[in-house]
Length: 519
Image 1 (cartoon, rainbow, N blue to C red):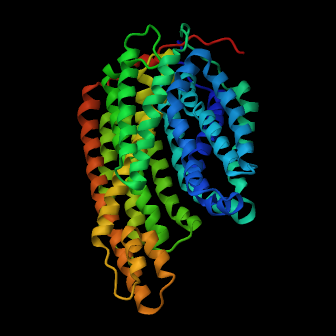
Image 2: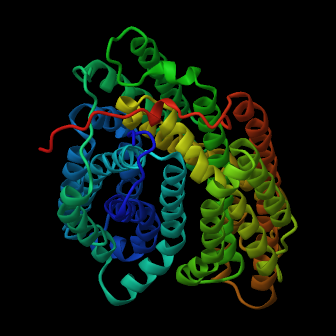
Image 3: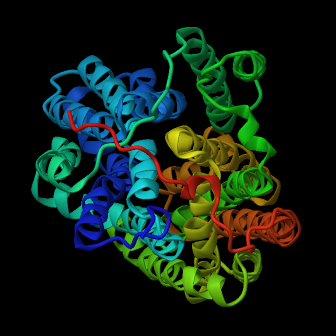
């Protein structure tokens, strides 16, 4: 039997379980950190600027180094890079957990972000290498995609339980046992693969990729927090210029960091485009839904996380169903149908009310996330499989970078849109001090803080009006998310179908790859 059709056995499926652990961990990380912020701030006394860097530096550097780490794994060996990254994540997690100052925590989080960038591209590329049979590969990617939603939903629950019983640093210790398992089991269960002829890593390209990605992500995040200002806009524009120079350089190199010819593959390009647009919707809606649960419904972060679990389960179910449905119908049709379902879920959220709106919100979000499951499973498979085997790490890094970019854009644009709706809708009742009125108009968080200093009917009127205005912002954002989901469904029906994703022929990624010697 050829490598292309060779079936995966118990070793490969057990190896997939090992690869699922760090995937689950990375999706847990950020939501757990948000819960730890109050006790962290009390212990380390960071300045406002330091607190922002503690929150953001990890995501900045992980997004910035994804492209570099993806192509580095192709060159030195994907398992080798994964294990190096696992050891680095373990050490930096310990450093973060036991940081004695805000400065030490910022440095630890920065190093942790660089280390984490090695994990996702290597994981995705190794799945492509371990599962040669297209049906099994589709199932493996579906299981991988499910881990993300599990981690996202369980983050507040796990974080809440940890922080109820331990100190703030326990939030960073989740990575220690996971990486120990990976370091022990990885060499036994995971094969080593690297490009037969990879060439030297072009350091100028590495610098250009960082100079392109980091300023764009930074600019978008700053615009989301503070609105349009000279510095973040200039940073984003400078990043785009550096990104253009990066792309131009790749076309001239014999061994580029990113093979720009991949974008000639219609399935690859369409899947990336769908991923970016959909992540804009997911991130923007997630931001307002979690805010609704906690600030409108008054739930604790842990209880809010529990209400997010049904949506994660729905996404897992649809991701598992997608590969089988794609064999019966077509990949393009299954993805498009799922995205149409997601659009319907967001339409339901557009009718949520501040009073008694929790059931409809949960139902709508369950429907929306059920619809996103197929693109998580099938789209990732299309992206990784579209690349030649020796460049699947690079393709995987582009997939992850697209997701990070979509999240940043979603929080910035839809977050700003919801804030505009809130400010235009909120009313400040008589009796609220003039010093608090502007705070109330800026955000629901400000209204909640101002209400603590008020009593009686004034506080009640203030909270009711602010919560209604916030819900109006959620409704408008949901309408935009529905439009985005419908647009991606149209892209799937046209571009993916035109790209021939349903031909049944093996992609470039199904060609056998020469395994490297074990280190």
